[in-house]
Image 1 (tube, rainbow, N blue to C red):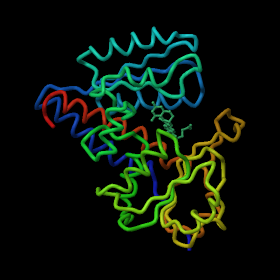
Image 2: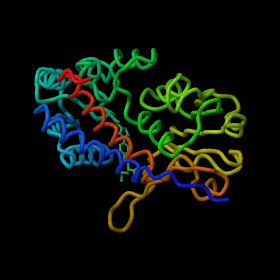
Image 3: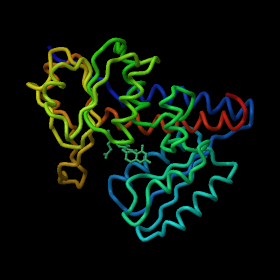
Length: 295
Ligand code: L34
C-alpha cells in the first residue's frame, strides 16, 4: 500500500484563504489591519528564504508587513532596542525574530524582550508556560501547523502512540506537550526520543504517529516503522544544490521507502514547512484581534 500524502501546500492554501476573509472582515468591520515585523540578523541562506516567504505571504493576505534585515555584526543592545521600538508600535501585532541568531547574541534575552502579547512565535516563557498549562496563548508555529495537518487530514490521535524524535524548544518539546493534552489533535500517549535514548528503534517501531524533528537527512528507514504509521516529517535538510542553484531538500524520513509502509506521510518540501509560515499568519491575526478586544 502507498501512503496518502498530507500536502502542507494544499492545507496551507486552504487556511490562507480562510485568513484572507477574516483579514478583509477585520478591516471592513473594525478598521483593524494586522501587522507583522520580521527581523533577520545575518544572511544564512535558509533563514533568508524563510523570512522572505513570511513577509511575502503576509502581504498577499493583507497583513501590514515590515521586514528588517540586519547585518550579522549587529549588537545585542541594538537588537533589543529594535524589539522595544516594535513593542511600542501599535501598527505591529506580531514580532518575529528569525532563529538561529549569531553566536554573540543571547537568544533567550532576545526572546524574553518581545512583548508576550506580540510573541506570535510563542517562544516567550509566558506563552510557553500558558501552552503547557493548556491556556489560551500563541502556539509555536511548527507544532501548531502539525496539529492542523493532523486534524484536517482526519488522523485520529486520541489514545494513539505518538513518538517524537528531537527535543528542541521550537518543535520536539512543544509538539510532545501539545499532543498529550486534552485538546483537538491531542489525547495521545507521547514518547519523546533524543540523542541519549537507548533504543530509539524500539520506540519508532511501535509508533502509530511518528514525528521526526532531528535534522538528519533520510534518517528513518522503512524497517524502523510499522505498517500503517502516520509520518510527520519536520526535517528540512539541505543536501545539495541543483544546477540552477536551488537547494535540494530532504526530510528526516526516507520518503521513498517509508511511503510504501505508512498510511499517511508529509513530503519535504511541501509538507510541514509551508504550514509553519501559514500558522505565523494565523497567530498574527489572532494577536490583532486580541489587541482590538475582539477575542
Ligand atoms: N523565530 N525562527 C523563528 N520562528 C520559526 O518558526 C522558525 N522556523 C524554523 C527556523 N527558525 C525559526 C521556521 O520558520 C524553521 N522554519 C521554516 C519555515 C519555513 C520552511 C521551513 C522551515 C519552508 O517553507 N520550507 C519549504 C522549503 C523552503 C526552501 O526551499 O528552503 C518546504 O516546503 O518545506
